Length: 385
Figure (spheres, helix red, strand yellow):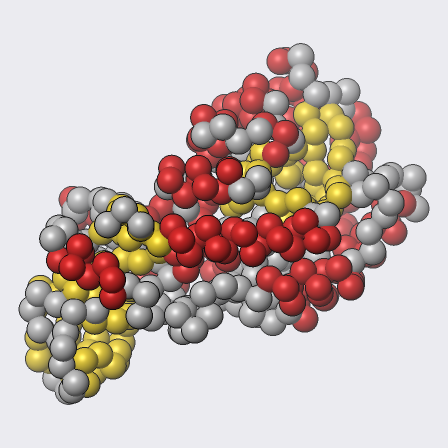
């Protein structure tokens, strides 16, 4: 196991904490950007996945831009040195303050989700003497066949502009003196395992492109969002997402116009496998027909399992026992949802053992909170330990 060389260092640290394997992150970024260069694509890292400054520094150095979903993310991207012309601002509920922050920063574009939002952006841009570059986030009505909480591209979801809204949207843009329509934006969900879903997306995008061309509207760029899955079940066997197959699918199915740029918004696929939540076993408790391994990490540190039933590979990284037992791996928070895994097979586990919860580099530390007044978990990094 890749973590074995760090165990002695882990034993000296107070738990729980996040551990980031920066070598894995570097390899992931190199692999991802290799395919961007191959096809001439561009990408904006989805900061919502992980906004740890060390992570952002590496992503910025790799040449990626930033995909932001709040004004504070926009400001953080600017503060971290991302080129404003590589920053996009998405989100269904942008406040006036957030819009002003992005306009002041001179970002690449707003990914807009309603006619009313476009009117507000135009009004604020006019007040500030700016021109807002906008892209229309269209809802292609595609079921991504992923967790219902992270599916975003169906007509009944709150995200995006449905096809029947487009005539009104174009009227609003035509009336806006401080707007420039530059592209289309799509995002249909996260943790998408079936690449045929992306084929469907490309077919939908091709149709939308023709719809706009029939109205003499030429689009400078198409943004296909993110969504490619990572392997939460066997992260050591599959430390990287299937980037080659993914980009080949896009290249073969998407109809790209001359001079048009294709953009992506990777998040989870870049950072998930580089992060671990490291915790100690506080107690082993015998329940009715089961055993509980009670950790000092809780749902406040990693909320994904409690929030939408996500599963992570879990390992005991210190025991020498050759005997396997089955445990419900739970935390100390006063909620029955505070659990990381049910019926997890582990070597016989005892108080003080170190547990690694894998694939925690995305939507882990960034979603940490102080529920029950618990401390926020700190972060440590390889190769420094």
